[in-house]
Amino acid sequence: MKVFIRTIMSLLCLSLFISGCGSDETTRDKRELKLASSAEWTQRADGLPNFQDHYGFEFPELAVVDLGLAYQAVGDGLAHVGIGDATEGRIAQYDLVVLEDDKAFFPAYNPAPLVRKKILDKYPELKNIMKELSSRLDLEALTMLNKKVSVDGEMPQNAARQFLLEQGLVNNPESADTARKDTPVVVSSKTFTEALILGYLTRYLLEDRGFNVKDEIGLGETAVITPALFSGQIDIYWEYTGTGLMNVMGYSDVVTDPQRCYELVSDWYLENHDVVWLDYAPANNTFVLFTSRALHDEHGWETISDLGDYLSK
Image 1 (cartoon, rainbow, N blue to C red):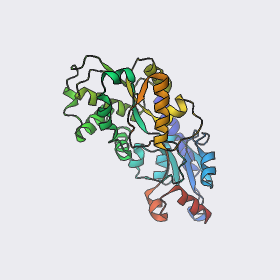
Image 2: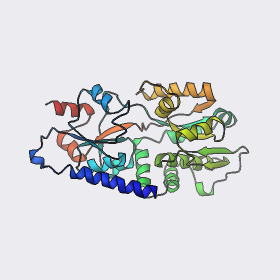
Image 3: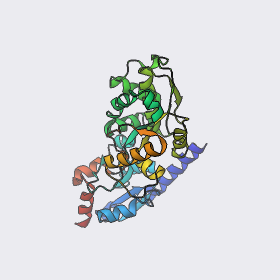
Image 4: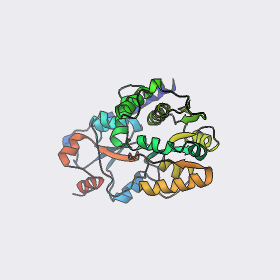
């Protein structure tokens, strides 16, 4: 019922947004770019106010919508640019173009497997096994995996199995021998689409490599899953470097360099909680600014600074 109500409210929000966009385009200054953004991003420290200060320009119009509707608004031509997540499947669905963050404003949010040191000491091969997977998870791969689930309606389990098979990382994850290693490994994840996919990728990969896996996928969000890892209730799950830095460590400065962010969280987690960050994926699931394919082709916008140049003309 909550999902149904949220969906209705989102549609009403978009309907109101559309009704405010009915002015004749011939009377509109073509440089009045409209940004579609969630309310949260307009208030975050790494959000709109500091973004505009950092890049030195302001959006003349702002439409506050549900985060998921920003992609549709830009794809349907109801806004010129939108803000969202780098690996969101709807970027591919609406053929949106992500603009390069050429002045490095957005924080690093690379996903990486977190594993308890006690388990890694027992099974040191986990490091290389998980690296085989993480190294293949670039922006294109994660975006298409998300699209299969959130847009095309596939189950996360099926999307994960198919990806592992296509990449040659497993033989047949459905019939893998899961009883060859004595100590079980508890695999967990958060509850949103990408996290579920990452959880099942990990489960099926480890099962194929002979691990006895206990499935705790979809356990909860940061406030739930982090204490579960620290207390030893779970053994491995995927976290984002920026989330670990800002939400768990309470680090106040925004870190945009992926390697620097990784080093900070790696040192802190190991020193304070005996948890190891394994190699992070190339995909940086940070915030991104995107536009439609048509506007990209018309104006040649490649970077965020290109928008600033366009507005200043």
